Image 1 (cartoon, protein in one colour):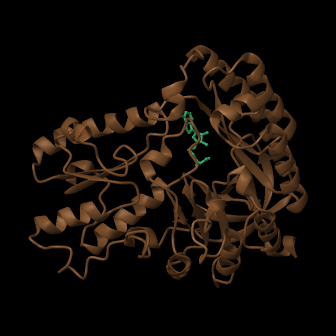
Image 2 (image 1 turned 135 degrees about the vertical axis):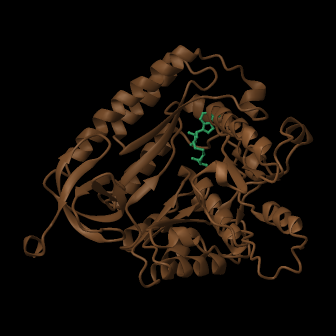
Image 3 (image 1 turned 90 degrees about the vertical axis):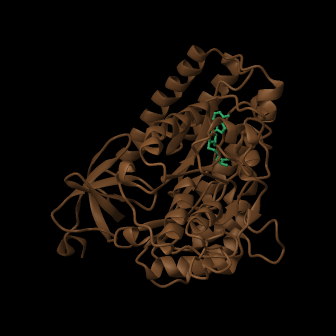
Length: 432
Ligand code: SAH
């Protein structure tokens, strides 16, 4: 989501005549886009921000824009006071305050600057920054902004605001524009992406939106994330099964395998319901790859409750598990009402146990790709190799002199590990 938001700011700045630089010392404007989902992310953002302070001393004209979840929907007076060297504070997804500030510096206003197209997410489409145009194979389109679900541990709803779906015509136009600029793959984004359209009866639902996007010529792959188990409708799964451009990969966070912990997290489902959903996905979309998120060390989590999570992951054998240690976030219900009572060492032990389990699972799933031929969409060169992904979102590297950017090609897998695979291009006579 933050990558998508940053692209939008870059595009707004280019419309004002700015160019990208890789060196902070030579920048006139620095935008720091921030995440606060865990304390570690917040600390990193604040550390980075204070490293920019000397630049501001050297160049008083430098504009520093703090953006994203550290700011929240509206910046607090306390935050402004604490960070006097920040010139502009902006909410997640919103480049408007920065554009306004830069125009004012030039003695212009937003009104008389028809040129300055501001990509307010709701009614404007995104154009890619020029720099990205010749290299961006895969682009993100946020379709649901904010979140209204309120999991007890999660700070996102309070920082990104309530859930709101973007109008379908804006999304479709944006997809058309991106494909016209050379993009081959689009990933639709939302905190609960499968709730798309549920806040507006006039809008299509996610499955209907997928059918509409599928018709775009030149678009080769469509993905979406993140799903919530309670909103993955049969119609959505059917659309994934029916539509060849929609990739068989889903991100369906589970968070815990223990029913009491799930209840305390306010997730709205049981371990058994999650198990049944995974079985349904696998029966409707054979070969589907499934990723999950897990939090270990939620307040009060006992060894036995953690074991339920471990056992569920061992049983379900999902493709990927994004693991996190519980981090109390100020203002969330769990931070307010429940002591962070699982010692750090225990959190780490649980984290490592799941990591080791998942490594073995991923290794054996990847092993089934060995000597198989799979379609890979290549994104970029990484050192001497080209990097791409299978339909199931597995990372594949291929060594070749050819420029493969944006190419969708059959690859024979020759080595597999827990996190990636290596293969070679299938020559036409081989594949015939
Ligand atoms: N809305 C999406 C993404 C949420 S943030 C979703 O529901 O999946 C990504 C992940 O960060 C979450 O899935 C969760 O596993 C983790 N996370 C969120 N809040 C956290 C917290 N307070 N401590 C630790 N991990 C957290």
